[in-house]
Amino acid sequence: MLIGELAHEAGTTVRALRYYEQQGLLHPRRTANRYRDYGENSILRVRNIRLLLSLGFTAEDLHAFLPCLDQDIEANRCPGSASVIAGKLTELEGKITALAEIRDRLSVFLDRVNGGCDRDGL
Amino acid sequence: MLIGELAHEAGTTVRALRYYEQQGLLHPRRTANRYRDYGENSILRVRNIRLLLSLGFTAEDLHAFLPCLDQDIEANRCPGSASVIAGKLTELEGKITALAEIRDRLSVFLDRVNGGCDRDGL
DNA sequence: CTTGACCCTGACGCCGGGGTCAACGTTTAG
DNA sequence: CTAAACGTTGACCCCGGCGTCAGGGTCAAG
Image 1 (cartoon, protein in one colour):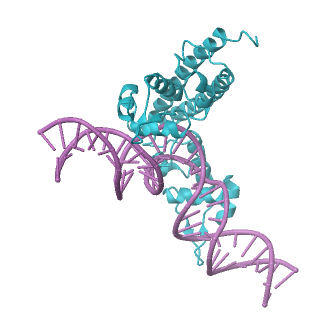
Image 2 (cartoon, helix red, strand yellow; image 1 turned 180 degrees about the horizontal axis):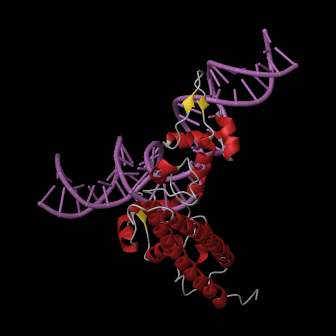
């Protein structure tokens, strides 16, 4: 399978696939004319990569998932990745908490802006 | 007041102040030797800028606050900024929701990884 | 033979909020 | 006189995940 077809099958772009390879996440064979040649399993692999990226992992984080990227990642165990996941989970909780704080501050802020003014319009 | 002193008073850096000016948020006078010359009100103004940035507004968003940046922004009404604030609040809620979803997915993911494996270590 | 649709590598652009030089002018203290 | 400690502009660097050229090669169809 050539890169364009894989991109189509996996729902991404040619550029993204080359980027994943550059990050060490894909290792396609090459045809005689140096075209990248992917196997069928690459479709699942790329989907897994995109799933994990959408979950907030970085490309570097994904190295911990390398051994199991070709399998059904959601159904299968992936030794070594648990600590990475746990770390990301903690990081994520922190971000959510921080954003919630900002939201609360902003909400109070909005109340003041609205409450203290609006003699004209309201 | 020169730029270094203002940076110190407002708790930020010289570079940040020049950046704010570049973004159209500050307009210091110049002394005879082209040094930036800030008034006392600039301290509050810069603090307000930093407060708003920390609340998640971009430098561009801050243009909506220009008329009131020199006042006590938390106590004062700021006509025209309410809609910007409300928009940010909505945006923020969206981000929090998205992150919470990711967190939940990730949590399920972690459970599977732990539950399906670990015959050796645990 | 030529056109068009693929493929290749390499490299710059983007976003945000500055950090961090470089190379230079000014002012003050000793 | 000189050095330190300020100030000036300009320009590149950072992060992550690609988008988007530029300037080629390759291959099948007409």
